[in-house]
Length: 469
Image 1 (cartoon, rainbow, N blue to C red):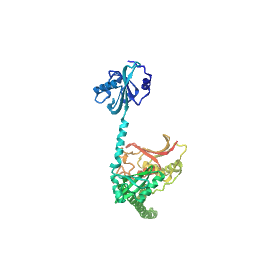
Image 2: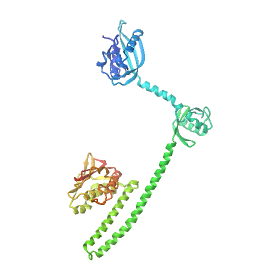
Image 3: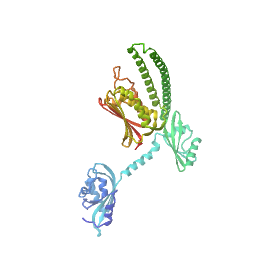
């Protein structure tokens, strides 16, 4: 069947948001536009040659035929029904059927225009729900005219009206009238807080021409929670302050006698070392080492406490990472590595080694990493390397030491965490060093990661995220 109708063809070729089907008088689809393909998810080859019943829910062929009869008889027919897509998804549609005639007025086919009504149905439901919203809402909703008269109040507003000693079509109290006047004068919504017995409500006042809508929300629980939160915050701050003061006091109380012990031990050693058995003389080293270890532990606890409580005084400045941090640390640890027969190497791959950061905490990061690398390496080397990776500055500290088991790696940066525990552990320490390293990295916006395998050494990588090349 051929139709010489240019306007119809133009519609077929251009419209995509409306489905259009061309049927012969027997109800067979002989053509469709791209809008129909989009609507139903079928190809044109599949649609053409079928009846419209393939597009109806439950394949309503009898109903489809009756509609064809109606349009053949009356010329035009319109209705709404549920259709189905190729993926089984159903949707509501408005369908308009009209006759297609040739120039002699003879009926040659039927044009079926399909409009997706999904959005219209949704909007209708929303409008229905909105119309029910004010009266059925569990929270108070009121409307007050510019003269202060309450022209609407839902059931939830009644307790407020009773408290104000007024009612619908009577006037709101002066303080509410003032708020209404204020909102209308600036033509801008605002929030006010009102109490009802032991409850607190926040009211949104929304201006609309010559009246204001008031939408109330019960914030009593939120208000109580905020009060409790403030109390908890104050308690936590007090606790942090007490902890810091306690640690500072304890540090003083421990450092003072330790300094006395170290001083007098040094004097006694100087006086007696040449007169006593050499084996007994080594006990002075044990006293000195024990004192230093206790001092280091107190320093770590105090430093970690400062960072955790937010009381650490960060001082950002320009730092030469190579000459002010890494090179001095390598020189400081040279004796420790030499005593163990370990090669300590510094490799600088940077043309410009200047960064911005807190000198003390950055120095502590690499001091702890180098110290650990030497401590847990029995032979081989410790290499400190700086360079660029993915346009970011990095410093790595790698060793050929004992390595870390994969089971322990997730616990590595937790305070007081050690892979070996108990009195039989091979190395001393309190498990605070790497926890402090992690905190100092966060303080300077650095990223730290570690790769390690038991028996094959470790590689700690520190990225300076804010420095790009």
